[in-house]
Image (cartoon, rainbow, N blue to C red):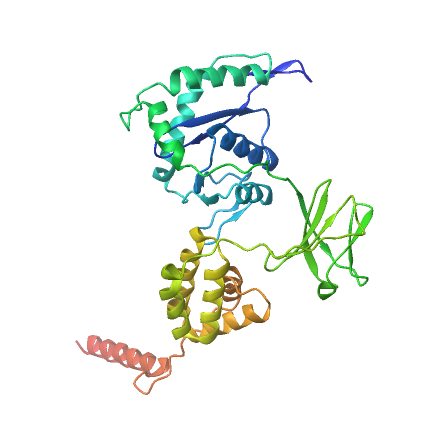
Length: 361
């Protein structure tokens, strides 16, 4: 409980815990409120406290971080996705109804809560200072019950394996969408900004802060143009941001299978392998091939052709089309299959014969 200066009353705080899976080193942070911005800021503070980042982070599926918890195609909040991309981390939502996947951090939450229970602090800084002191003097020097090792010594071995931190903190944006006017501009606040002529009368994604305005293609997420808000007359158009590439040895077999199933399926598989993040590309490729088995290669070939024509050769677009256009049921037409009326007549004759026999007896 922390004193809220605006009301003069004590309020319950929110506890954020990030735990490294190998050494069990934990970062414990407190916040007065919750939200997408707070969630992203807590991760950035935790990365800085650890002195590095992991390649993959498994997160709980709360709304501040995850908009849709899908195993193959999860959707993260834009602010959170932006922070993870800046630090080179892939966010993987925890598997639904599979608590064993995040038990390490759940136990850490309960462990930290015991030290804060029934305590009151006059400010959030005082509460955070108490928690930091407890972490460094009690939690880190302890022998962990599972690893049977001192957490601090274990973390010292793990620290060199962490990815280095970027030189600067993440540049935050506000997000939205705008429709490009016939004049080739979008309006943000009271100012208009030029958009590519190819996107007139088309909706685009917008990222903006006090310094820059960025316009992105809504279907692919590709950066179209970036404007300096302090020098509006001199927009800068950088090359598109490339995603993390997968090595051909990991994806060649799946892409080749896609080409064997159909030309358009192969094109979509190749696009997924080339543009998607490593942690999700393999899942999406396998899912695309599974769709071909479930719905038929010809039907999925049509879905892929539609996705390519729409300029979005992605797993999400193909699956959305299949959801709205399921394959027609198989027709029950065969010389060996009799009409249902024939079976009805047989049943009626059997019943009539049985009734007549019973009456005679």
